[in-house]
Picture 1: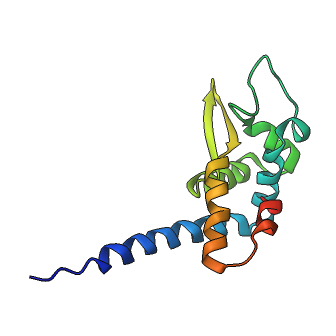
Picture 2: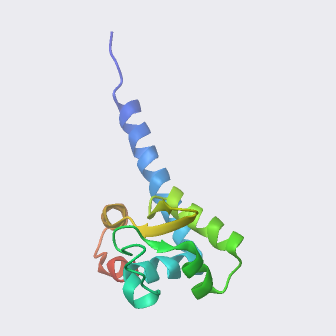
Length: 129
């Protein structure tokens, strides 16, 4: 009996492509991309409350993201959920508040996936994210 291992390889490639597309869709919204850029340097872009949380380790409170963006809390929460599903941010609950931080490993992997998927120099993507 001959087995076909290409179906497993094709499925893995399809999963990788789906993951890449989900991240690209999340980044296609200019506000979500802007929030991800702000979170790159949380100390520079948001009020820092070291007694409450470390913005690098725990993240930035969603209320600070909402205030900076000027959007409704529900919109910001929906945008952050999209970024989290795409693996670009991680959330942490601190009391009743949710804090978000970038997932730098996933972002680096995304840049590498883009590099392999489209070829060429992905330094532009490094600068955007």
